[in-house]
Length: 293
Length: 175
Image (cartoon, rainbow over all chains, first blue to last red; front, top):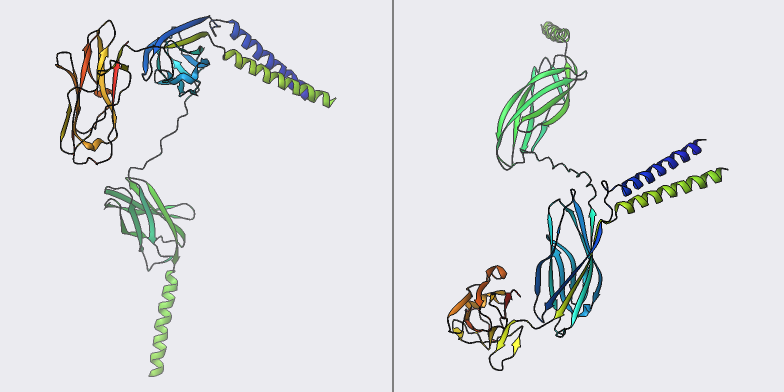
C-alpha cells in the first residue's frame, strides 16, 4: 500500500517535471529557443617569423535582457603543423590556444556577459617558417551562446575572528584550604600574558561562587602590560564565612574577555571550639602550676 | 508481487532520473550558434628588414658585434635597414623585448635614421631594468622608403670576455 502511494507520488513528480520542462522549452519568454545560426568568415595574411594580431576581429554584444554565457570551441584545424602560435582571446579570457602545431586549449566559456556588455574576440597568429607564400591554414570554431544559469548564492565564509588584544590569563597560585576565622581574606596570584605586540591596560575582575551558585564579590584591578609581555598580580580574596567548596573566578574585562577559575576549600572553626580550646589550655596551665607548688 | 513492485519502483526512479536529465539538456541548449572559420594565408610582409648588401628582405635579423668594457661601439649603418614596401605610410614601433646580460651595458641605443640621416626614433637604456612593448618608440615611414638602423653601445666593467650578450629587439606595425 505504502509502495503504491510512493509510486504514485514519484509518477506525479516525474509528470510535473516533464510538464515544467515542456512549458519552459516552449515558452520563449522563459527560455528562448535557438534563434539563429550565423556564419563568420575571416581571412587575413600571416608572415613567417611575424606574429599577427587581429584586435576585435569579432564582437558579441549582449542584447538580451539577461546575462549570457559564450562558449568557443575548435571544430577542426587544417594544416595545424604550420601553426607556430594561434590564440583566440577576449575580455581577459583565453578560448583557443595552439602552440607549435599542438592544441593546448580547445575550448573555454566566458560566463555571465551582462546585458549591453561586449565581448571582443582577438586573434594572434604566427605561422612556422615552413609556411609557403599562398599556403593556407584554416581554423574552424564554433561559438555558442547560452542563457546564464542563475548563480547559486555565494558561500559566505566568515572572516576569522582576530582578537585585537590576544590575552592569556591563569590563576597561578591559590591556597587549597582557607581557615575562618583565622584568614578573613587570602591572596591569590594571577598571571596575565599580553600576546599582542602593543602594550595595553588590562582590567581584571574577580569573584567567588559557592557550590550552590551564590556569588560573592571580590574586587578589580587595572594593570598595564607591555606588548608580548606578562605580569603577575596578587589579588586579595575575601574568605566566605560559611564552610564549603568555592570557585574563584578571575576575568580580564578589557580589552579582551578571558576567564580563569580554580577551586578552594573553606574550613570554619567554630567560636565555641576556640573557647573550649582556650579554656582547656588555661586549665591545663593552671593544673601544671598547682602541681609544681 | 513484491518483486514486481520493486521493479516498478525502480523503473519509475529511472524515469525520474531520465526526466531530470532531459530537463538538464533543455536548459543547456544554446540560443545562438556561430560557425566561425578563420583562414590564414602565407604572404610576404610589406614592412621588412632590407639587406643593403644584396637587396633581400627578411623578417628577422641577427646583428653581431664585439663588446668591450668601458668602450663605445658605434655602427652608423647596420647590415639591414627597415623597408616600408607598402603603398601608404606606416607607423612602426620598436622596443627591446629582452636582454640576457643586463649588467653588460653601460648604455645601449638603437636609432632609426631617415633617408637624409635625421634621427626619427631612439630606443635607449642604461640598465635594461625596463624593457617590453610599453617602452616602444615609434616613427612614421613613408611608402617605399628604407630607413637606416644605427646601433650604439658601451660595455660596462661586467663584460665577460668570450661570452655573448643577446638583446632581442622587436618591431610592430599595422597592416
